Image 1 (cartoon, rainbow, N blue to C red):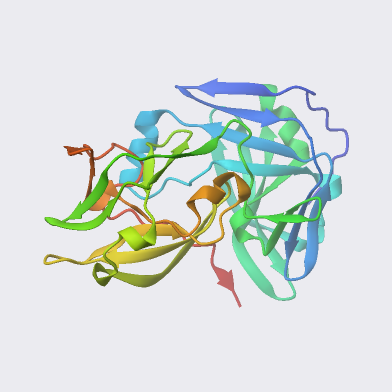
Image 2 (image 1 turned 45 degrees about the horizontal axis):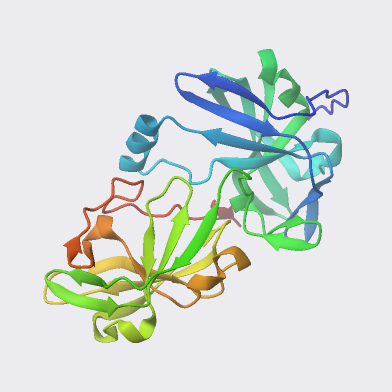
Length: 296
């Protein structure tokens, strides 16, 4: 891999647009460190945050095909601030009409390999040309990602907000004709790009219908999430309910509360009115993508 140290990137956010989708390169604001197998593979105060905004129609298609990558945020480190000996070109290429062409790299440390863990736009064009001097690492491939000394689950979009409000409205959740939750003490979570979600105290949930599963996911804005399958008299609705056990401070009001996927068969009833299932990126059968495969 050839190092190039003459990168010049604008000090302000700039965008590149193509067919309704665009991305923002956000200027460096904090030290970002990446670790894998106990080794620091990138560490810089000059890492850029790449934020992609998708055309809603394209995002919906990708959701149906289960190819959408949640977040679309990644950090780009200057090549001189990465341990380039940890990355090996694998011959794969990628193309984006807004950016140009790039090469994929496997991350290899102490004999452990993550396929396609990083990429460099070595033939970036136009306004994106400075990206030739940066390496992006898939945050899901890392063992640790840090802002200063605080570990984070992934890059966070500064234009993304999470707010929680208390509600005294009468909220019920119905699954296959059976009321599984009934409360006047819900909390409503409002999150950028997603519909409001009602979170319900566990004492107001009929727990006999819920069975915990092994699925765990992480959200860079809310924290780690646990799931339940719900079965009343009909089919088992897998991973239809979820809860954040130790949420981040901005979502702390939903700690231990449970919400339900309306898209997967739950019906939320508010003050006697049935809410229509939202058209969101989580259709029935959508599976959260696992972390990239570790090759021993």
